[in-house]
Amino acid sequence: MNVLSHVRPGDEMAATRIYAAGLIQKLRPFFGGVDAAAEFLAPHLQRDRGVIALVDGRVVGIAGYRLDGHGLFEPKWRHFRRRFSLLGTAIRMTGLALLDKEEQEDVLPMDGIAVAEEVRGMGVGSALLAEIVAIARRAGKRAVRLDVVDTNPRAKALYLRRGFVVEGRRRLDLLRPVFGFATVTVMRCHLDTDTGSV
Image 1 (spheres, rainbow, N blue to C red):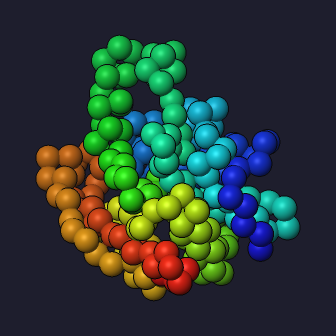
Image 2 (cartoon, one colour):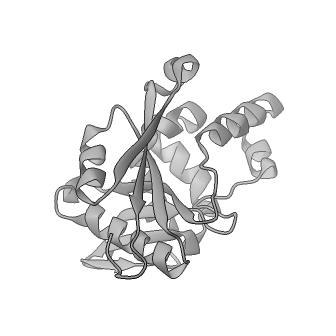
């Protein structure tokens, strides 16, 4: 397995499809199915804000992060308007903003992580997280932050094994019928920048 700190040119759709499949519970209210989400998002993938895992040259996992005001996907209002009505655009952009992670000076927020189903359990997620942590250190950050939904205990277990700790929880009571989950757990990995350990 190879891990790259960027998305290679030409891998945008493959990486986005894996991302959409892994995070479809969050994306479905805005885009429908995996194919529709991938088709819309792929042209707006920021290759320098994504880490990918390759097996035999094929993308099998992706993790995104937000740095200097830019995240993994950066569609603008005009891109939504080409696809959706004015009301639909406003609803989608407002809803996606609710899922957005606020940047802090010393914290690198993750923009999601997804692994192809056929390679889950093979260490791909751990390798992606390790690269994200390395990027955070190079950027002078003191922590990495992510959110995990209450319907994904497997992902939460992975983060705990990789040194993340629970920092708090956010309830989405009014939005539960939209997203299908009620609670988001906020997790943080504190970095020891002197020793290079987590």
